Image (tube, rainbow, N blue to C red; front, side, top):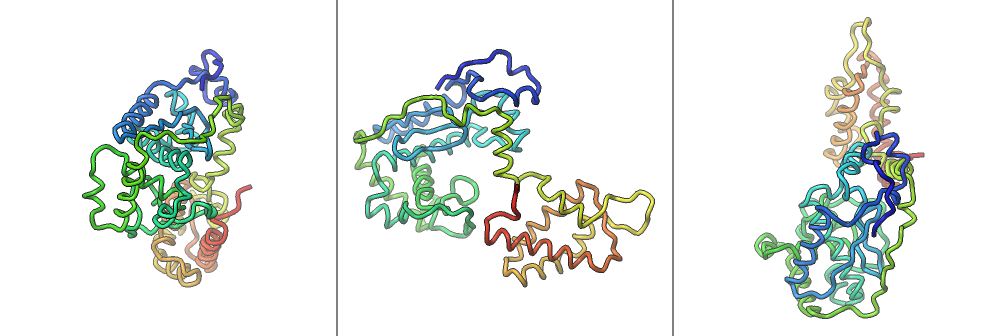
Length: 341
């Protein structure tokens, strides 16, 4: 996909750049990402596979069911946009060559599943489950499980049968046969061996009835960058450092300059860590280590905000326990720590 260019946008400051539409940036399928796509195709060819999933510029990593095309986020195609992405959302997904290849292999797994209707095979379902099941809004991976491969962060294979397949495909596709040794004693090995068996049966075969994707400017790319990031930040609000700021400022006060006897809020929480974690875990049944992770986030942010606590405030400990309990319970029932408007 090639977009109509508006000149000199790379020299704009962030505020001015955010007013530009993504589709007007003139981005092309070139550079490091294009090299990674070439590597993906070579890896598929080395396995004797015929389908080379077409790749297009999009607003996120995605493979639509039906046409089996891979969409790659626009910000990866220019260093200036990578810089803006990091500023706006604190990370650049697929920003290194290694990360890009991992994601391409993963999306290629989806492409093959859709193109050859693999989810309909009984043996596929026996190994991975039913692809028709609803995607969960949130999931909690079991870090100790050996029934899934380890590839993308967050135990992504455990989210849904489609993701389990795509992750297993990605591990199988990577050059070399290291997976045989790494997963030798894991139940996940049976899935990898099934991928190999299935892909050998597809060697040299083109998919039939594959819907052709027409390269047009997607509606999501007609957005201004400001709108794109406003939506993205709202969707991922809980990952931003200021997510809890309003609540913390209600619980604590700004670090006093003249009054003595106050503790920093971070120290106050650290001193009571054991009792806070124990109380929240007792009433929510949430594992202590998860409660401790959340408390650690609050401690770090309170320190950055230079907040203080009155150690003589008898109600503050119970207020803090109640607040964290509400966060945990809301996350359990909604997948979010609190509602974002």
